[in-house]
Image (tube, rainbow, N blue to C red; front, top):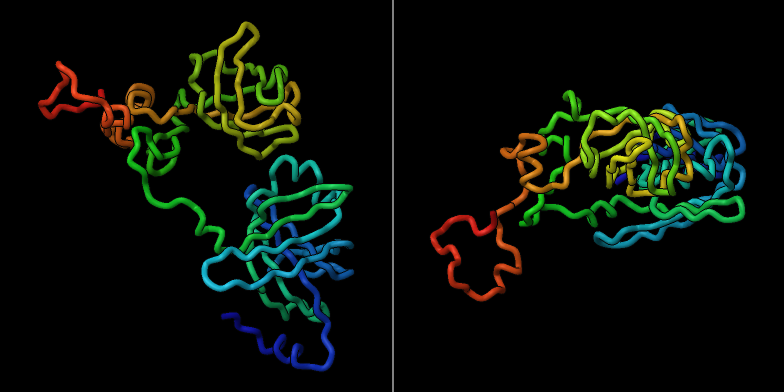
Length: 296
């Protein structure tokens, strides 16, 4: 239930109103942007909301139960606020969007109407259309654990416990050349063996992808340096000389956890759970039936 301040309530009860909508966009990289459909800048919750002519919020139907409510915001791409390239780079993916009702004659009279996250963004003919998903979207996230052989922790997180800042577990790479949209040749990693950074993470400190994190899938040694393959297209936005930090990766197997990180005690998988191939096969002469682990 929302509580309307006395000042705004009195204004809404009047015969004439001076209302506008404001949107605060909180991106995952920490950048906070503010927009309004009014023709002058309004300050809401400490954020200056700039006029975006052509910005229009759609209707949001209210649904009973735990159904996800969806709406949208339609606007014009603005070079110094919402840039087409920033959308393509994913800087707005999953961003938090606050929708405010504001008395533009007295911006201190405001009401937070809803909080959404940005879903799909469509760009065409110089405009964008961003889908807004209500908080119920979080109910679609998978919770709980699965009995599986692989670890379900992320290397370096609290459940894993590995310190990626320790010596030998991170490096600084400089792009030498772009091989294709998913692979780049880098220098600076000659002291690491092949596959050391496979399934790791790279964070860019320069270039157009500055501040973004990209998953590293493969790490190969080559005559001109180290070849890193990414899980998403990076070659369209990086050039020779761009620098990024890369951390050691883990393929989530128990043997890797023990040998590479010495972290077997924190392994979050179930390496000795028999797979379907074992459960469905027929008994064979010589099978170990003395209670020992059936999966080495």
